[in-house]
Every structure is written in C-alpha cells, then in structure tokens.
Image (cartoon, rainbow, N blue to C red):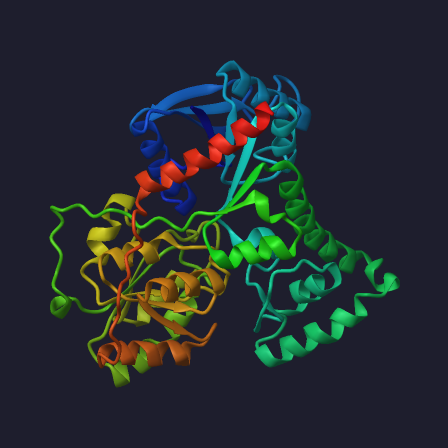
Length: 434
C-alpha cells in the first residue's frame, strides 16, 4: 500500500511525541512492504521539496503558497491534493492539525472529496477542550462533551484566580449566565466563545470527513462518542509498548535512585509543582533529587522561565534536552518517572517506555495518563495539581510501600501496531471500492 502520514510539522531534532510515533510507525510500515510518504507543509514556500529519512520514509514538503501571492487556502489544498495524486496515494493518515496555512480541516475535507481514504489518529486531548485540561472549572473531571456556554465559562474562569475553589464557583455561576444571548453578543465574551466553537467545528469535521478515527485510549473513545462520532468509525489502538535494546545496560531496581521528568518545561506540564517541592524534599527526604529534561522557551522569547527559578535549588535540576535515542537509557537509571501534567494527556509514550523498563510512573489524574498507569499497573496517581499529594506519592515510593505488576501488553510494539493500522487502511480502501 501507498500511505501518506500527514503532520503539521517535521522538527529537525525529531523531539515531538507525535513525530516520534510517526517515525517509528513509518519504519514498521515500510518493513512490512508498504510505501510511506510523510506530508508536511512547506510553509511560505512556493515549491515542493522532497527527501528521505529513516528506513526509506519519503518526506514531501508540499508548496504552501503561490509565487507572488499571499497565503491562500485554495492553493494549499490544491498543492496537497496534487502531490497525493502525483504519487498515486490512496490512503491519507492525518496525525496533526494546525491553522489554514498548514494541515487544516479543509485539507481533510478536500482529501475525502478527492476519493482518498482518510484516517485520523488523535494524539492530543486538547482537540476537544479549549483549556486542554478536561477539568471543569479547572478542578472537576469533565466528560469532554462540548457545550458552548459551559465550555466558554470554563475557558474564561478555570484559571482566573489563584484559588481553585473560587475558579470553580465562578465557572458554575457564569455557565448559567452565558446561556443568555445578550451576554454572548458582548465582543470579549464572543471572542472566547469562538475559540470553543472551533473545537466543536473540529470534532464535527472529523465526524464527517474521517473514514476512521483512531484513539490511543479507551477514555477518549468515550469523548468521541459523546460528541457524536459514530462507533463504527472509531478504532482503539493502544499506545505502543516500545522494544528495548538488549545491549542497553540496566541498573537493578536496588541501584536506581532519584526521580526524573522528561517533557516540555512549562506550567501546563506541571513543572512548577516540582519546584514547589524542593524545600520540603530537602527537609523531609534529604538526598532525594528530581532531574528534568526537555525543551523550554529561551529567555530571548520569554524574559523569565521556570528554568530560571532553579538557581536556588540543588535537588531539582534541569539537565537539558535528551535526544529520543537516549531517553530509555537515561530513564533506566532512575527510581521513578514523574508526569505532573495539568493538561489532559492523551496517552504519553513515556509511560509505556517506563513500563517496559519496570520503572514506576507517578502521574497526575489526567485521564489518558491515569488510564495507562492503571491499565498496566505500573505506577501511582496523585491528585490533579496537588504538590502535597505528589510529595506523599514520592515518599511512598521511597518507603517501598507499593509493588507494581508492570503488565506488558501482548504484541504491542510498533510492528504489531503497524499491522493494526494496515487492517484499518484495508477497511477504508475496500469501502472506497463499494
């Protein structure tokens, strides 16, 4: 089969979670005898560029603007469809979306109209939630149903003050107020509601134009169903459990020490919670260290960053960016991985990597992370945005309170995942022939 994997970006460093997933999936599909083309926009460029990566992945950076003209959606669509047709590609697998200059909903609709099978794998829970948290009022877990007046109130007030309880009260109060047409017509309120309406538009477009929608968690399948995506279109393909390099030297459980965070260094990922633990760790658990790896915005863009706040600590340390190839080897030296996200993670690959290494994960109770940890019995869950509860979980691991099963999903590496996708592709192609 000829398959196009479609994303909004292709970073030179290969650091994005979606990008790592697509790279490994593409390599596995190629080894199974398929031809894989990876489509990304050639932003603000008038020509298409091609190259190869990995085991023969054909990169197609399609022209995004017409020479001498401003960005026009119709040209971007035409360029994308023409490049698909020129390669006789019948399957377009969308993994990422951006604005109208990039991988837009209009490209998805145009691909469907062109008679090319469309598959969408959703890697981000934020496609259904304007705040990205899926916690109503910033506190109460939400079922993901997009209700414009309720979601708009949550968007405005869930992070309005430093008090979580007050934010919830404000959200509940204004949820009722935003039902009123007169209130919705206020320019500032209307602007917030437009942001929520874009989420509704996104789900609606996926519902109408995707032949199949792949979810990496059972939880998000329920979000899709409650927002009207018909069940026969949805396929659940669990997050991959990666293989291990047999030559990688692993420390025994007894020799592993300290804790590690790997991801983007920002408040959405909950990194500020780690900093807030430094003094208490020093006092109650002297010698315990939390190391952080990952990209963050440099001072040239943001005058003050979370990393700047580390100067006073020696037990919470920033150690730079890890190349993807070094992640598992580095992780294997730690007692546990910490994922303190405030945003609703879909299905972090790092949980499955840690599980493969028999290293427990301490995750906040955002739905995707919590599902993987519980499903694989590979860690503990702490209360959303609670530094105090996170500390208690670290203390429990230091005292060896827990025993973990580290259940390994059967036949769940990228090669088996590629076979599951091949079955989905075949379904769609066969459907197009009817």
